[in-house]
Length: 190
Image (cartoon, rainbow, N blue to C red; front, side):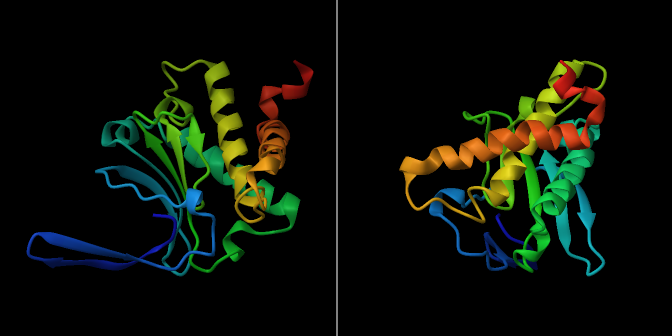
């Protein structure tokens, strides 16, 4: 879900209720819900709230394929917060960021606010079988989708005819944010 989980499930006969906190006002295309048996890598803040996670199939998490996105994604998010002087977590006290690897996601990725979804191949990294080029592509994709939290979600265009602004800023930060955080790629020397 786009916001923090706030209540343990109440089991009543065959149904299970999950309750989530409020979200900021957002465009309807940014709402997301995932129902799956996924494992996660997560960061809990000092108040005991989940604030950052990568979720994927259990085999992918057990195989450490989410580690790269987990580590680099946090650095990219912190850098974007610093660069814009708008801390992502201060937008709403109920906010968190989840990156979800979806095996059969048709699109490459989607910037759902608080629950970013990716095709598995765009988020998961296997250090024994994935090329360094693919590792760089994952960083680009993370940067692009994280940039959308500011350009497209926090500030939303009034109508679709200026969608190029959302994508333009996301494309810009896809390269520059990745370069600022992942200096070892030498992006602007290639």
